[in-house]
Length: 207
Image 1: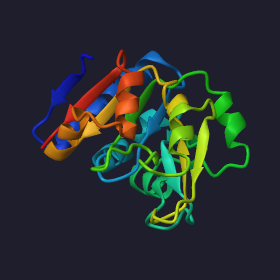
Image 2 (image 1 turned 45 degrees about the vertical axis):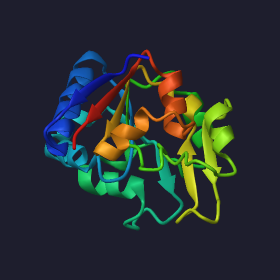
Image 3 (image 1 turned 180 degrees about the horizontal axis):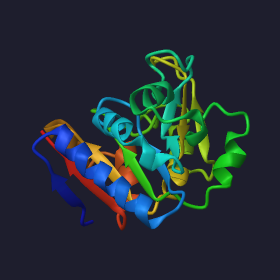
Image 4 (image 1 turned 135 degrees about the vertical axis):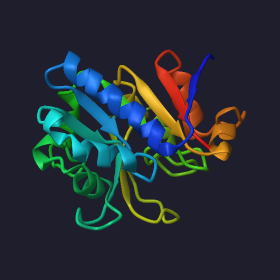
């Protein structure tokens, strides 16, 4: 499997490159649709969007996953995205929406998915060794709930099947440890992502 690994000097430089890619897609599509992850890695991207959010008035965003907390809670991925990006709620399809399954079914494809990963090999909220891990990786469902006691919060996550609707996927590996996990022979969630999206996934890394 040939992964294109683009290395950057800093996380800011990495996110600047992603931001330029978003702008290019905005020029190509009247109403582009993006999947974005939460966590530390994309925060510079959210702030960059805030500085130029006049370009994103017709863009649609979906977070890869969400913690089941109040949106005003600092642990909410959707809340953090809205606060840092200054994007309006009208531009965000919330995973909390009661009609989320239908709303996701109505999306035929995403123009770009930007994902982070954890030191345990998880992406979105698809963690190893959860009750619904296999379902999240293998089922045709577009959204999965995780209520395992060892997780810090109950979570909602896009499934791998839903994420694979993206025409292009950027996976951020923001440390040497995360980069080493990618070449590990273990069967972690991120390895299933790599195997099933090998023709359209790009690894962006910084140390």
